[in-house]
Image (tube, rainbow, N blue to C red):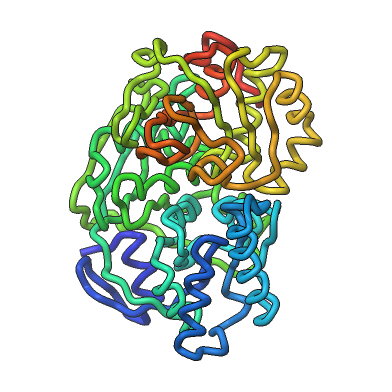
Length: 424
């Protein structure tokens, strides 16, 4: 019997010829990552046990991304703990305020490459599966162990396969495919499983959209999300990679606990209503919902490709007078590129607020908190009660195209209502 891409990556990192679902293994990691919320807990754990040295200063990434620039004293102190630790241990991949969100930064800078095994103290670490890495979120104490030893123990997950045939309709994106998936299987439909995506529609997606799909695997309970590398992956990685990489592919006779097959041409832009990412409805059934805020950004949809789509819709338009539209590029490089392409001008002229790179409103951190009773349509990944502010506020999840169109209309809107062409 053959093996999945996930099983092959884990087996190689565990020093074994093969592994099987349910097996407990200890595996060597290629990178351990934490941010300003989770890293301080890991650092305090290391200090508690008197561990004075990390396993490899070049295989740890620390990113200040969630509550920065610091919104209050506690946030400033959290960031200082991370900054001091990075300085003490000469951590190679330390990114300070404004550098960006970890899940955009690491692939963008070639720090994560295909075939890597990455653990991060953040649930959306699964993003890197979009370029063919096995990456998963862990707790801060598990991350402390990984930082000290260079290893992690894990149970080999069962794999599920999601095949999207056909061609995507205009305005349908990777965000819509993952929302469609979660809508069908539920927020626990892939609990502790590797979600593998394939099919013609997936192969047609650019790397940005593949990263979006992998990013939200956790919203279905997945241990990871992954897409086997192809020529697009290699083209993306070749100009970025800071180290050698290895391409893994699933065998044709690999075993999957479940397989889903869908016709992508039947899918329209999707919207996840409160209060679960699985409460998914077509945009055509959502246009009666008025909004107070629109947010374009986050590790899910804050890359340059996302900003181009949003800017194309907003160009020459104005944000609805009773809506605030917040745009946050997911990294400094994305911000600079958006500046050079004139996208920031478009956003500001349309009436948007543009911020330096930060997670900000996605987790209810800052830069766009919702008041009681307010509604936000967001390109982010999670819409639980209180996720973006007051427990009685509401967050709706959608693609950059739908969010931009909604910002103009003052209600959830199909992009066709506002624009007719996709910016290339």
